[in-house]
Length: 296
Image (cartoon, rainbow, N blue to C red; front, side):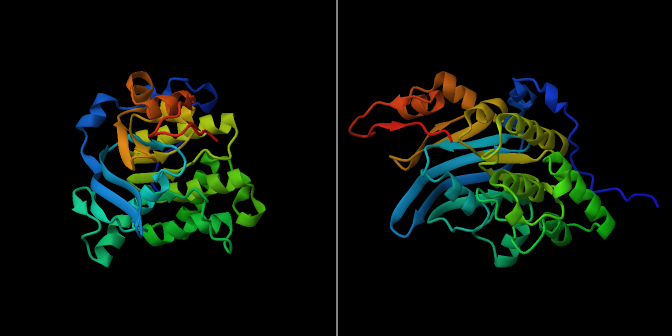
């Protein structure tokens, strides 16, 4: 019997073992700035009750870009992602997908917009009652028209990408923390969304596999044109693959830098950004108590 073709989705074609250290050179660079915005955030404010997390948050994510959300632990990076996918209503501002205001839409319109997002949660958020293959199959059943054989082929493909070929029938409880994260990434990739939101994707991975994951993220971007929003403390990954970004300040509760992580490292004169990007201790001041730039 002829094997059915899987969804025409990205193929891990880069030679990961010979990955160029300057893999950010694969980024579209100046062309990204001219690409249409997949996502636009306008003057967003995020709160939990009376507690302000961040305010005056504005940025655009262009097609094919890898957009980094950077900042000290607890500054609101993951909270931003929750708002972008509809889990937390902002107290002010707009979230627009291809020009459509998500929070101004009806529940049906919001649900339709969410279908264009693939999310990797920091905690993996796998369904404990399902095997890994069943977890990945869930978005394929809900969001694609693939038949069962095509879905099985796609499941095998994305598991191969994340190095978990033999784990299809394994339960999440039997996986290590890093393996759970990779399985959740495979699920996020499965239906080929135009926007991927990755919350600490390389946490729990050894340096070699983290580097391979960087290459995989680039490959997905190159082959699908998808945009990626990346929350990470991993400076090597941020500097290698992200070509745009925003830096959240935990003290002022506002963004204090925009641009690529490489530009932040080379050009920022903000003490907090400077210390974080160089893993230096931030000198104590009235506005900034002494702290260390956190990298897991």
